[in-house]
Image (tube, rainbow, N blue to C red):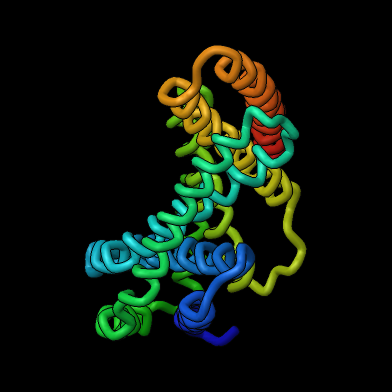
Length: 272
């Protein structure tokens, strides 16, 4: 990468997002939607890093506001897809009405996402990026590597000091912090031309994925419990309670896996 590598990195991410947006506007698969959400998440990480580098001269608020409704709508569709995928693993006739309920939710979410895909304002993104690119022009690679490294180190310290299991919201926020710190470290690796990730990289990946799995079950449990309370009675309610118990057991098993990964993370840092 050249001496202004962050500018090229951002340009590549923006191109990837625009390509995903164009594909999804024509009709999207699960994979297409996943790529769209990943591209937005990577942009958000880079905006945060640029904001930190600018020392108050630029902030990401307008970019976040521009993408908010699109990202939120994409998340609603993704959640509906995951709920249907997990519940599809249970072959129980009691679930027919719940699957119908999820299907209706997915239809509404798809309608909202299709609308947001069409109205997303690329011209406004161009306007905002014209200011951002001027800011990026001031950053040399050495400065970016130094500041990003400090930011990642602070993220690692925060993750080590925080009680991951204070409550469900905290653990979900920990996943966001893990992903953010992980992505900033990847940017530093790219700028420094490092190709081989360290052991912490693998632990980050594993923890991010496991907390994501745990969160999927969190959301499904909230959904099916609400459905059971609002719609089920008698024998159907009893059968749903059995399925909920199975889902809760998987949810708890996932939390125990996260505890082990948290211990591995602390052990790796103690050796550094």
